[in-house]
Image (cartoon, rainbow, N blue to C red):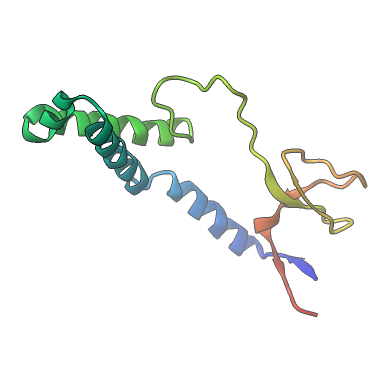
Length: 125
């Protein structure tokens, strides 16, 4: 059986979601992974990036760009907007019929308004 979480729990979920976009760990790891791929498979002069001060600047620019795009846009965009449409589908539940759907719509077929499944919890009968 599914029950709706308390307003305090929902507020905590929203706070966690807002804080998550300010985490610099993932952009830093993506930058290091991209640099390692460039060094391993790129031209020989990419290897000199690790021995010169320019390498530090490149790492800061790449990591900073990824971090700022995550904060401003909510996604990692380095080279402008993507050419394909971005559709965010999530698991949602209808409070009326308790049907769970994976969709980006907010309206259920029964006429109810779909909510994020994170706002609900499963309780054993």
